[in-house]
Image (cartoon, rainbow, N blue to C red):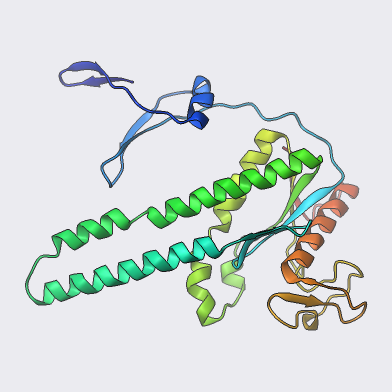
Length: 266
């Protein structure tokens, strides 16, 4: 990397991973050199990659995004959110302890400089962990859709925190739910891989029977269970929702003039 300094131009070596080195030849425009809070330096490079060849499809892999399970697909495969929640609780507990110690030092007239430094070092670790989980999960879902010749279908979850009420025990977990980031990762990976992405109406996906179409609040006897009050169909609630998402995406493709969803062809 060539840098112009007050002492003249210098050449600085830098390290790239496999993912970055495979794409560096597509670098476009200027690069930014940034220093993170932990003292590490990073080179931010914009790359211009072509979209993948578009694959026409009439079938979809429905994906229900959640909290207990970060994602569940219409094939019944679940991706647990326990690891993300464990990370959130661990960092939250450490922050609370450090903040309490800092407050105690202030009361005794001592400057909690070392504690502030630890809090600064801790900042961002949870976010980076979530980002890594979302990158891995989005890559897995897009690869599965590619391998099976299907598109991907997601719910339109814009504003879900404003229109949905959560129990007190769920609020902290829901507040850290990075579903928008996961959807963004899925969208750009799908576009790059030529996978069609269909965004469907989320209304009643959790209350509608994926077999007979009966919709009722009583179809959900518990948070995790779905049991249809008409045909008796049972399924884990998130699997049933994912299958409804798949059905709505297929219906949108069959009715191209129906603008109930938002289509993003890869």
